[in-house]
Length: 69
Image (cartoon, rainbow, N blue to C red; front, side, top):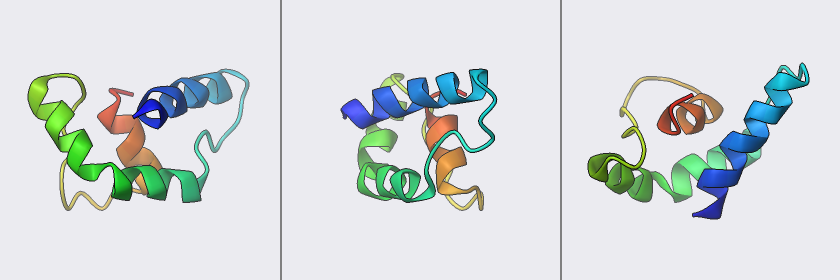
């Protein structure tokens, strides 16, 4: 759960300092696969944006989109 909070904030800092790849691919894949059900539940409760299945987005983009970025 803490990864869902900390990673988007770290991505914000990375973008702010000019990094083109704010989230590591392996970390983003881990988050989007391991926490997919939790992200859907939190999205349904209004805590996050529910991920859209089948969008073809990268794991990093899915993690950022769920957090409203």
